[in-house]
Length: 200
Image (cartoon, rainbow, N blue to C red; front, side):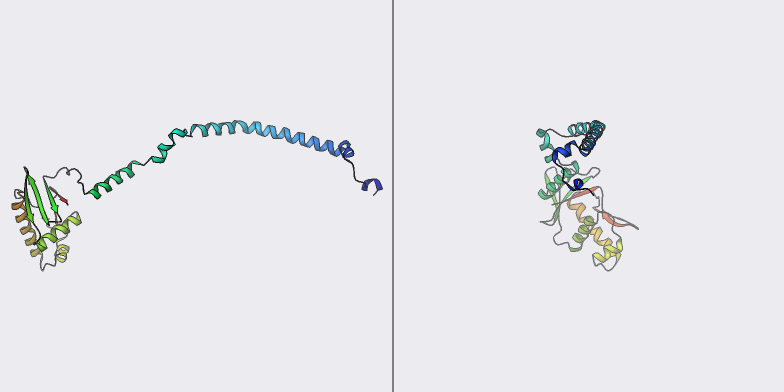
């Protein structure tokens, strides 16, 4: 290796050398290539910007989204409020009679032309228990299950409780011999769907 090859080059020598020309040419080609890529991407970038603007709400409407609640959430909230206040929903269509079950006085009450007719259940142990069980079950309860729940010795005893309850209720509440508790062979016992009982 010659002595001149080991000697460091000055800035002037580097600028005048072919390396500098090569570097400049490379940078030029890079800039040209970069511009071509940007030109290719520019329509896509502009389209994305347009879409972003189209789906961005004005600042003045942002509070609408913040306070927005789906319809099902609003309905659930209203039902909870009604339940908390013990307000009654409108009478179920198809019911012939409305009877109010006052759980404080332990009585069934019916209003006819402004007059209140009442059936006191406070001392009717198994009759009250039968009513409570059937109200909780919301449908037919098998006779055998009801016999066990009421601690009756036979299924005939269950039928007797039902008959006695209906006789008293029909007379005191003026139900025109309509039974509050129905029975059906093979299905069991249930609350008569023609009677709507509201618990208070």
